Image 1: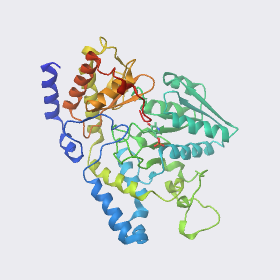
Image 2: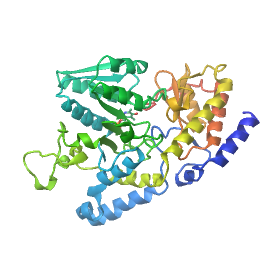
Image 3: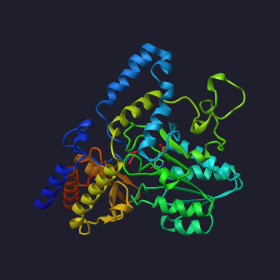
Image 4: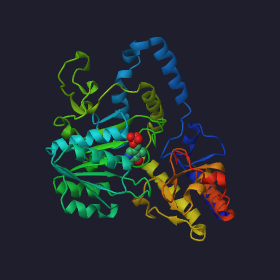
Length: 412
Ligand SMILES: *Cc1c(COP(=O)(O)O)cnc(C)c1O
């Protein structure tokens, strides 16, 4: 790589107001981790916190820990912390279940507000699980029709009639970011309810759910929030809808009085009514602790660093991309993308395996996408440069073309 890029990386790292946060993560020196959009890195303080939840709270306090150590409050406490990071009002966000299950709950809630007769619009760039959930509810409710259009065709589909708009803000493949404010406003003008999946937004982008007047949202705990593998997810219900929402997946933790053990379901006040069963305490403890790093952080600054990192990566790759068979799949306009950059390459799978073997961890999304996530809390501009340099070397030398890099693993 040119000296010019080295100097730029050094200057950008020196000027980075978030640079000190990297030390709070357990990342090996020399490893370039560009997959925090799929599994966030481990914050250094989390293992001790989880160990004490296991040894002291579970081991010694046993069932009294539900009250004594506040286990019972975790879905609410952690939800309030996340609310503050996504522009949500207090009392609107709860942490529980997986993103898929939370999407089922908020979509079924939105459908019930429409009498279970609705045209649901989503797009083909959405994450498959979101579409599977919507298809499932379409099968369950004869009055529901799911319309899946191309991402560029969403605005037009809203004009043609929509009752529920269900989208993911940042496309997991291309990184393209929808204009949440404009699409929400346009759907509202037609009387529709709007659900946003924030899986690739929360913890990386400045999201303003109240400002945009979103109706429902869901998002992920293990991506940019660094909650650990399989960390519980979150859902959001705008306050104006809470009293009217009838949970389809009703469970005792969504009951007004779980420990009254009543035979009939009475929904809890507010957002709690979409909770279902016992929270996964150990995973919640890890997520709650991981969120400490976000305390006092300005999400505008986090987003700005994500834009600078992705800009720099594109600039580093541009000089050799065309010549070496790479095509940028992510918008060049930083306002139109999230915090990852995707490059198409015919041999994406073995190229990514060769990158991982060389200490640059990204991932591959079928059929031809090399995906590089730039988590603003711990990725350095020097990492960006080193990833681009390694990619160039692997492509020039064709060192990806070895049998071991072609062997497919279960998780890509
Ligand atoms: C990562 C992701 C999910 C993951 O859902 P899980 O239920 O946690 O497996 C869902 N939706 C989108 C858009 C995602 O990016």
